[in-house]
Image (tube, rainbow, N blue to C red; front, side, top):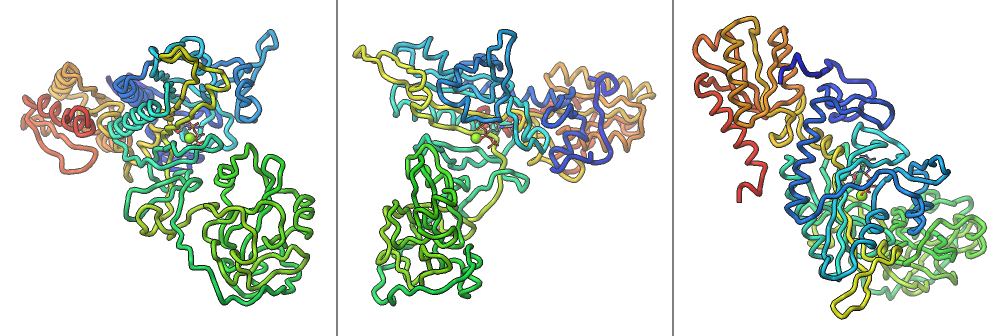
Length: 577
Ligand code: ATP
Ligand code: MG
């Protein structure tokens, strides 16, 4: 391909509305253009790279035994009513009506459609296990579309769904997808970290997000400084040492704390650190009140509380409920004397001589011993893990970092198959519910995450597997007959060896061509100029670094071909085996 015949609108300056490097670079390198908020157009180079990412995803899905299908983006709303998600998805789902006034949704995901399909098409254990996948456009009315392709309203996802006869079989399907993800992200040149993720109300331990660690990531991740433990902050656990029960704590003593409705106010008034105060938060879980106790310097993790309670809904109690259950205005709740269930964070077990609300206006209690004075229903993990907490696996310190979620594997159990009554006949002819898993990859987000991880001050540094073209062939003197011939020959030879090459044939200064080649980030740059050609040579340089080398024109195609093949093979764990 010739630069003058394609459309690569590179920009010198950073675009105004792009905040993170990868978004700036996608615009500057002419890979994408914005249509409007959260909607982007793929330009020729961007589309080439996207297709390469898609091809890698497809190959690894096929290798893992998943079957490619293609479901419509437009979905009847009745399917979403079956699972209750027409309501619970809320305004995040784009809805529209057809001319018969039937309600439709633009699919934000496809669990409903695929479960309906499999329920109709699979009825025997002989047809299971079955994993299907598609690479398709999804629609989500995100509250805050931003960072270009990272959080868009319309994006391309690879979504796969597995159906199995038993929990053990479902584990195997899950592991196959997990392994495929690890392989395909490596092949895309990405370093990813699988982190344990929250499974929400569905329960179970079985969810991992694949994170590209980056300061610009929207997800907070807790990782161990020593071992491989890593989890989304919503899910991360910490080890806690419970002290021995106290024996010598003074008796509880009320203290006047006027106008101290927050932990900060109590801490300032009594001149104690927040951690010495217990925070008592009243919730309503499935409309029944419960109390959560956490150390005063921590927040209640509502995902964890919801899971522990096994409740469908959880919200902070309103002021009237707080007043009814505590007998006091908001701000003075405490565990002593409450008659509702009390769930306390594990760090409070045997907590001794601490301060708590008195369930009376403008009053707190000193010398509270949780074990002695409060009637706690259960001690459990109720807070987010923080920097410097202790790793639950190896007892070394944890740290807080950030990541971009590029993929998500999720063991769903029977949530959807029960809603659709998806049954198969087992060997004994008995109808059993299928066990399901779902597995997503943000394909367009992955493309941008590659740039977020692979760039330098001069531009993108594409991994060879996904670069829009492996080689940029710079013709420095396009008017020189011998240069033109050498470039055309080399282009032909490389292309016939299966190497994609973009010839920069623009009538521009060399400086412009070098800058653009660096900005777009082709893995290999080959320069053909009258001066070096007079010595029978062309110049080869890698975008990832190192000196340029002069190579004889006669063997240039072979040498470049080898270099590209090596760079591609280095990223492919499968070809190395
Ligand atoms: P997030 O937490 O980032 O909103 P999610 O957990 O809602 O994502 P999933 O439903 O797990 O997303 O979707 C599978 C994958 O699709 C995600 O791992 C992510 O890579 C991608 N994805 C989700 N939402 C978007 C979006 N708005 N724009 C681009 N990619 C997205
Ligand atoms: Mg997710």
